[in-house]
Amino acid sequence: MIEAVLADPLAVRALEGARRLDLPDHALMAGALYKAVWNALTGRPPGYGVSDYDLAYFDASDLSWEAEDRVIRRARPVFEDMPVPVEVCNQARVHLWFNEKYGTNRLPLRNTEDALRHFASLTHAVALRLDRDGKPDLLAPLGLDAVFSRTIRPVEGVSNPDGWNRKCDSQKQLWPELDFVRA
Image (cartoon, rainbow, N blue to C red):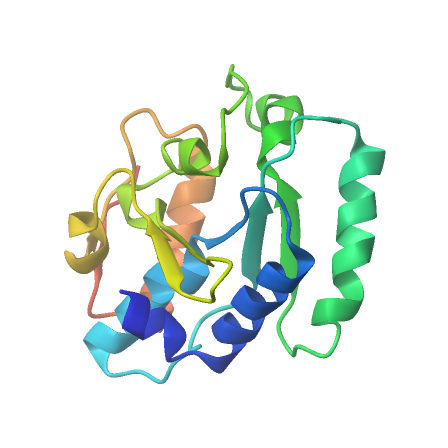
């Protein structure tokens, strides 16, 4: 998995930029990782199908939108020359907007790794960061089997079945060799 992600120069730039920003408990997560594996499995070039790079961090010291926005603005010049956006999100704040947006009752998360346990699919529940020495640190609290299985299933009770099904349809267009199970 790590090799597939590091084969994508934009993912490497996002990882290196995140390390320079020194955000608390940060990691590049979701699509940049599982799509890198899909590309490696299907012979597609690194970065194929990646529409953004999700950079998560966890800072519960100030849950205001203003605090998160300050981090986003601080990150902007680090990533402004990338052709694909880097989206920065404080995982400590997710429960404040997610429940309203998706009609759930999600409790506050404990850290970035905990956020992975709440993704819509086990395939999506992966993240990577560079440690202080620049060495990759993989986060996969639910394992890697689903990422390599070529079958993408929603978790039971996925909060937004319509959104999941739309995502499956669009990803099936890009990776027809994979099996996307609709909610």
